[in-house]
Structure formats: structure tokens, C-alpha cells
Length: 289
Image (tube, rainbow, N blue to C red):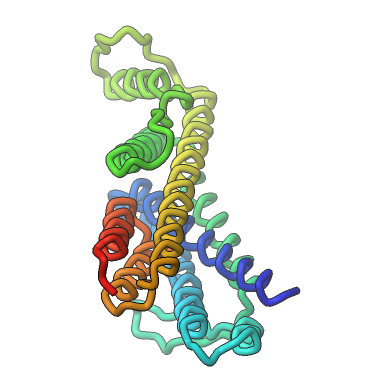
């Protein structure tokens, strides 16, 4: 595999792990708000897997930092990148219990495979715990909807995307009404809404699970689209700076590096990254030579 292809695969693996680490962190938080009683064992198992997933993510963070350092070195070439990409990552598995750190050498693709397994196991643990607990599944859906709504608002505020409401096509409002009716009836209270309460024979919970997956997929797609759009803006301004002989001015270069840092998948937040790109644009347009 060519160096560029291996670099692209490494960056794609880093992005995937970062995105799904954020997803399952929220998933575990929502599912185990009271991690005692019946929830104690699955909550601990999920958190242990989440911790290991975080260790895998940190190893990729360090590799991307090293790759960025090589890319910025004026004397480094493809051979230096190739050596770095060929070497296995040293993954440091730590424990909150004070046990010794375990260091394991893993190739990037091995890290990605392990991360996928951890994500899948965490999802299975949460699904098994919530299978007979409609309230847990309802909380997952509401949390997913809130996160998508917040991201959409941030994207609109920064002029990103096409301005459409990503929730409109998901049609989750009716499902949320059904959940509210079922939860109220389950507490023995009178439901005054338009939707009649129903017993969950499994179909309501399954519908919630499908809605959560669709909502999370839409959020990841929107987040990725914002990242691509901001990266495109940054590189367009970078080209303008080069054309006008400003690219290597210290202030302009510093603003560029700060924008690149804000666009890293493990740190990416739409408002912060957009501000950083805008700051770079202002530095480029400031006439500094």
C-alpha cells in the first residue's frame, strides 16, 4: 500500500474511533444514570470496555500527533512517514484500580478491529440492560435527538450545511409521543394527550432502537459534513495566503496551526473550529507580510 493510502487509512481509523468513542460515552451515561442494584454489574462492564476504548483512542491520538510533526518537518519526506506508519502503536492500557499499566504493540488496523469489537460489546450490554426497561431506551432516544438538534443549531449559526432540519426526515415526534403515553400509563397516571397509551409488546422498544440508530447516523453525517466544509474553507484560505506570499508569516502560520488543531477529530466541535478557521481567514486578509 502506498504511503498516501496508508496515511489516509490511518486518519480514517482515527476519525472512526473518535466519533464512536463519543457516541458510546453518551450511550453509557444515558443507560446507567443510577449504576446500582441490577445496573451495577452491566454498568461496570460497560465502563471497563469504555476505558479500554479510550486507551485505544489515545494511542491513535499520539500517532496522529507524530505524523503531524513529521509532516511539518522541512527535512522529512515520505520515507520518514512510511517508517512511522509501519511501526506498531504502543497502546497503554491503564486501570483506575492502581494496577500496573499494560503496554501492547498494535498496528493501526488491529486497533480499529479492537475498537469496533469494544463498541459492539458496549452496545450489546446497554441493549440487554434496556431490553425490558422502556424508560432507558426512551432516554437514549431523547438524548440522541437533543444532541442532533444542538449540532444542527450550531451548524446553522456558523453557516454550515444546507440549512434543513435533519430531524424533519426522521419523524421521531410521533414516537416520542407514544413513549410519553406509555411511560405515563406505566406509572399509573392518567394520560391526557392525543396518543393512546399502549403496552410494549416489543415493537415499541424496537422502534425506539431503530430511531436511535437513525438519529445517531444523521448526527455523525452532519458532523462529518461540517468538518469537510470547514476543512475546505481552511485550505482555500491557505491557498490564498500562499498566492499572496503570506502563508509563512508567523501570525498567519500560528493561526493556521490553531485551526488545524481545532479540526482534529478528537477535538472537533463546530463552534470552536469555525471560530478558528475564521481567525485564520482574518489573519490572511489582514495584509500581514
